[in-house]
Image (cartoon, rainbow, N blue to C red):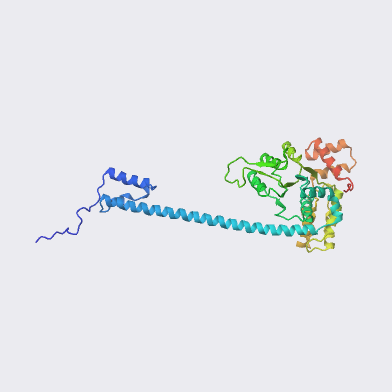
Length: 397
């Protein structure tokens, strides 16, 4: 009896011979599922000993696996992103709390570092700061060179008024954008906001407009608005600002548009002549600072006094404090280190020399121009500054 050698072979199962239409249908099936046909070895499936239906089934299974993998990958990415955002949030909250604690300690130290002989030079400034803390005025702008005691006076007066950081007032001393400022003002709309040396605020027309709206309105209702639909806007489109603002600047704004902002409150310059600075620094040196002794502080002060002139660019209270730290850092080389941070204005130095050598003003102008290449107008502008700094102790009070 003849044996059928092919009895275990499915007569319908043979190498798939697919026509062009069938191949195109399989490609379309892949593409409609979001899988590019080029990413699948379609020819390998076709070359198997399979029917068209089985090839199609294999492709459908492949599609299901691909879709499942994509879904799992998407979910995992979303989970990771959420975890990262939560971790960043916790890190931000932790750092914010740490900064707040350090600021509170620093402010308490500022409160303790008091002296009647120092305070008398800031009497007028402190009166305005108290008016802000009582919300009698909406804004106070303090203008003066860095290290002139602006922010120190504000924080010290707030501390004496028992105002709490984060509850009664907030402190901003970093670069900000208009939208970030809008959100910040909304969050702290009922507090005093201290902007410390954030010069970019008044250089930006949008930010100036926000502050103008927050500080004055003819109706008495100070409404601040932001019409953009940005997703980064956390505050509503409009809100009422009932707080007040203190802005500390290193120099008077030149932008005329800012003048409208300055008229919404009090503008006060914090400036001292050369001799007043030395007197105030002498009084500051008498106040305890970290682990320094009175003898050490006075030694540092006398060195700065002996090595400074009206031409010194950075003779200020901040320089004195830095010098105290340099003394403790290296008691043997502190003089060289302090000398390295005392800066002289070369143009002032030249004019000061010319003023003291007995030459006529005409000759002084000529020599100044020859040595610096600067104009006659510049000479007289700097000469006026020197004369103002040369005034003896100004009236106090």
